[in-house]
Length: 271
Image 1: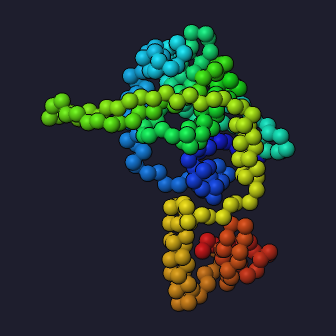
Image 2: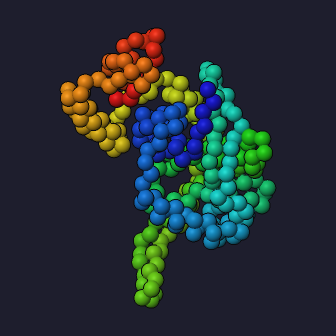
């Protein structure tokens, strides 16, 4: 297998629920999107536009001298082989901004809104490493920027509100540069763990810690009760292929209706 890994999924989704992570990466089943993060995306987009072509001294005095040259561009790494695994992976995503430093190296930066802390910085480090690896080891015809010497987060923390006139409100606050130390060996070991998880069986749902798993669990219980009522009233459905009777069966993906004439007839229906 060659798994496509999104840098953003290696942060929140991987840490929040292994079941949902595997469902998305391996089976293409994504959690429903939530409108609220769109606000933060809008703030990030405004920041990208403002800092485009600006000197890094304007962005933060803690960043080495250079100029912001690239913003909101796609990256894709070449296929990555990992020790002890026959499966491979590749990284595909879109970074916030990259500065070309005066020493001809590059700084990869991500905008964040909120209160920074060490735990979040460690989690986002995976995302930044994914961009760096993708830029230095790109797939054919993908963007190449090498070497990447700096990784970091630009945290905007609103702490005041102003109303200059009746039609506009302004939120203001400090911008803090948090540098992330690069550790490619640790990142590749993390990717090895990710691929190992994907190669294994689907992790069990985690309704105690994942709201989507809890929702699926509750709706499945309700639907199961409704289905039992229908079965008691009308009996099992007919096979879509031979119109013969069917029975409940259990397969790799759970329960389903299977034709009683199996293996001569392989008709199935979803529960």
